[in-house]
Image 1 (cartoon, rainbow, N blue to C red):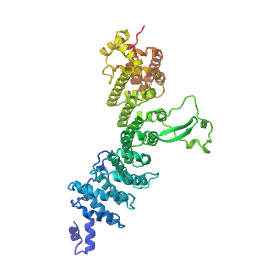
Image 2 (image 1 turned 45 degrees about the vertical axis):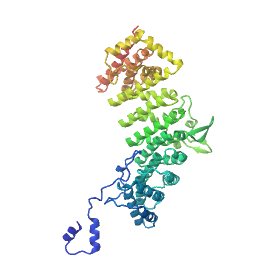
Image 3 (image 1 turned 30 degrees about the vertical axis):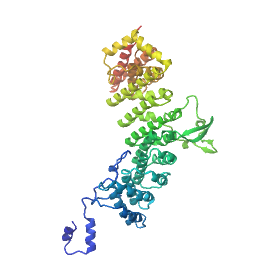
Image 4 (image 1 turned 30 degrees about the horizontal axis):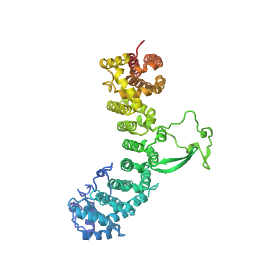
Length: 543
């Protein structure tokens, strides 16, 4: 204590020196952080935020409504100390459980707009405290419609431009939390400000603070559920060779979301995948968006700028190859992500797209390989998740065929007469007597088998070619996928069995040669290839 420190130094001390020692003495409650807002909707937990605006609580004071006007005057004072003191008292009022709800609502009516004005305070600590006071009020009051015309312009001014006006990462996060809370309280009214909210989210998705990006992704998912029509509204028209093409709000947000899909933090990538899934589900025609995500281009068309190393003239200016952004196949990057959580979120996103998109039939051939790739995951839990996703996809496929008069007869004939065919009887017997690798503990449902069978001829040529690539990882993945495709297609692989057997023989011969040279991975690959050959032999009639 200060008294003991004075004794050690010996003699009496002046009042000023004693005051300095008291300030230097460690206060056991100084580091105790009391939460100002328990989040209800947003992704970020306010208890984890380290902010300079939080203060130790030394008691709960009671305020009456008559003294609130004095606090308004103090909040507008030019003295930083008076503003901080007023914010501390307002913070205690908003967070104290002893504060009556009537007094809290009255305080919100008087102080709410003044707290928003403090977003532009020159002192970072005051801005931090003001935002935490707002979060505390927004957690406990419901009459917030009157602050919407002030809140959105203030937020746009602080974090709606690039680079943002707000320099502090912590305050930017608090500002996003305020926006999230306002949207959760006013989900219908926020539609009038979607243009401004989109600008804020576009800047937040480029923020250097990972927590800001995660909160922006959470807000996007929230908007996709409460403002679906506004999210798929046309925001601009882009001139192309075939004429002007509409660009939708959700498509623009997907473009802004792309860098977060490759963020170095796995938690950011996980939340970004969830936001991406929600965005695409809002659209009606997503062909161009999906093609952009997989970096697809027509195989018989080469962009003209590939032939000119010096660049080409576009829109009245010279565009060099270095200025063009590198296109990435984001779905392939997510399928091979190192994080288990990211890969699981990616699988769930894919099955949502393939069962809920309005134009899902246009994307089945592009999305199915990434979903099947989950069956080869090194984590058993993810293989089970992918298996259940395929079963869910098969159920949707069966329901759609039952509702379609043209396809209903095909499904009915197979169920009534398919079991009488010798190949079908053999397949059912093999599933009853043979044991297959997990997660294939039982025979896949009819719809899942039909989905894979319809795309088998597109997939097998590439897998057969990659079975004899020079990279061991590629060869192993190809062998595993061929095995799982055979389990889904059963006797339907007969039409492609010749190139498959030729690839098996070539790969097995190469594995034997590598085993003689001491390659440790060749034995495991040989076992997988022999398993593929055995499985093909189970379902294919030798005749």
